[in-house]
Image (tube, rainbow, N blue to C red):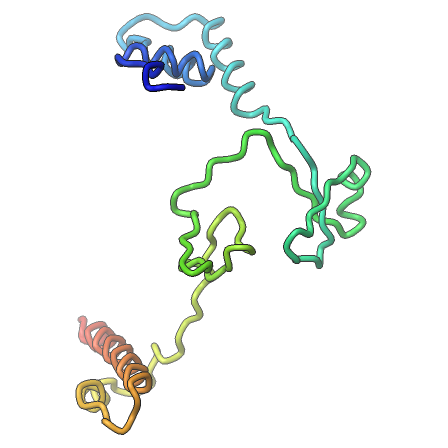
Length: 196
């Protein structure tokens, strides 16, 4: 489509959208109904419902694939026939369906790759699935302290601010990070304990 073929006005854009999608045409017709007007005819509502059901809930499977339940290697999916789809669970197969109209990935679930590794879930680019699902971070046991946390505030501040010079840069950064973590948790714990 060249630049000369693009619709120019809002009405032309709406007409082009309706022509390309029956769902868009139905939604556009629904939006034109006057809320203060009379009721909509039952046959019109039925036609809208049939169109929406046919377009939104009748995706046809383009291809069935299977893999063995313990196989997670890249490229392990193989095209399945009807027998493998039907008896897959009894034979220890994992079955998946591929559709002509793929679902739209949600923006919050897209991978963010840097150096071929997702920065959110840690999956490598060649292994990552369609959705980014970060693993739950384990709870740090240091968050619960069995004694008065005020005892550690000043020594941790000294550790963070005065770091020893005999350590290399990485060890200093690690110690500063640990001390900052403890300081943050202690101050939050103290504030929580001082609430009435």
